[in-house]
Amino acid sequence: MQDARFEDGREAPLNLGALDADDLQVVSSLVQDAVFPITEMRWDAKGRCFALLLNRFRWEDEGRARHAPERVQSLLAFNDVLRVASQGVDRSDKDVILSLLSVTFEAGADGAGDILLTLAGDGALRLSVEAIDVTLKDVTRPYVAPSKSVPKHND
Image 1: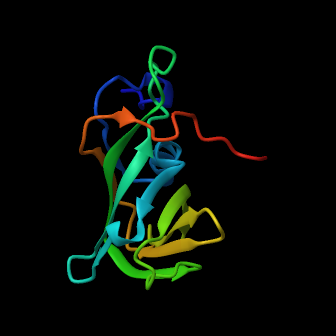
Image 2: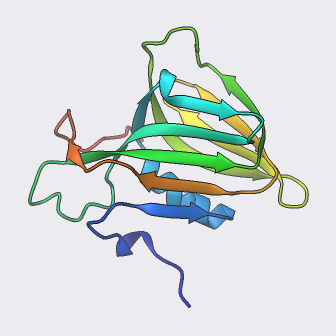
């Protein structure tokens, strides 16, 4: 059996899981430049789940040459979350739109560790997890990106 590759993406809704750091890198590449209102973050401490409803840029879309760049709403869920901390995120301002740059894992002991969600503008979310258990699922049909352009980064 061979692992899926980013290049193997299809014109279909994504429904992916990540159970290790390599899987998480694939998820990170797919959610890079996703935007979401601060009100679309949920932390269920009792259920040990943290979730974001994202407007994800469709990096895997091979049809971009035929149509405008697209986004899709996706649910990014983290299970086995023990603690959530944030830095540079003003949760009192309900009108804030956040932009997700990357999702990385800092390993601890016995599979535990921290998942770091790096946000544009020096913000970050740190999820202390018992193990990596992440899902990314598209929940709407794709729509034309409001900017009608591909996100760009200054390196």
